[in-house]
Length: 235
Ligand code: CTP
Ligand code: MG
Image (cartoon, rainbow, N blue to C red):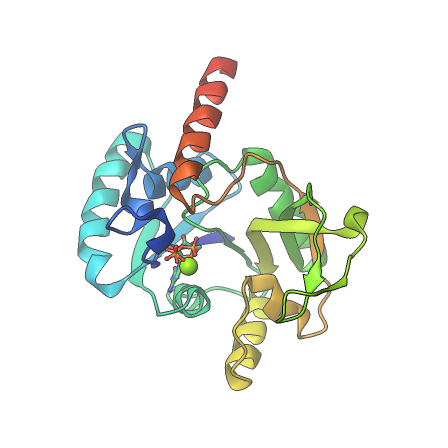
């Protein structure tokens, strides 16, 4: 059983759309709906858990009921999130009833509608084989480690640096333990794998592609439109 959890309970402040960015339309279709439709086209994915702010649960449920008629979504449910992405993901994990420890949970930012089927399938495959898998791309830029004064401390070897994306896939038991330990230690990570790494559990990279961007600032919308147009040309 493969369950995909979609954290979508952010405010989208950097997008400056005056609303939760994942509810904004990209070429006529809300970003969240695009993301869910993509996962629904993957045979290996069994169900979808969408995590939104408590005050958006009703609105999003209506939106997805309509989207389901149009796109045929995998079985889905909507639940309320928290003040941090990590809390939203934890709420999503808890909303899944009757799951086994070796079921696979994929966590995918609702704000990444351009993920490829290949990346989704490969993340599932490696998570099943190894317990923890994350989509990523080789860093294109040189990255510097600096101190608080803005002084460069170190230049890590770029050939070993990966920019991490989602989906991130885990055996459920591992992800549950990682979140429980993070909560007990008041650790807040910037991705799900960082919690799993703290367990001493090995996490493996799945090479994704540069189109799987997280729509974060207004210029990302321009880029996403170009990628969508290119996809349509190739269809
Ligand atoms: N997210 C969430 N719960 C939160 C914060 C974020 O579920 N408390 C989700 C967002 O909806 C998004 C994903 O996590 O799909 C990645 O977060 P980000 O890109 O930072 O989105 P926002 O937090 O909405 O944007 P911003 O930080 O600009 O306000
Ligand atoms: Mg945020």
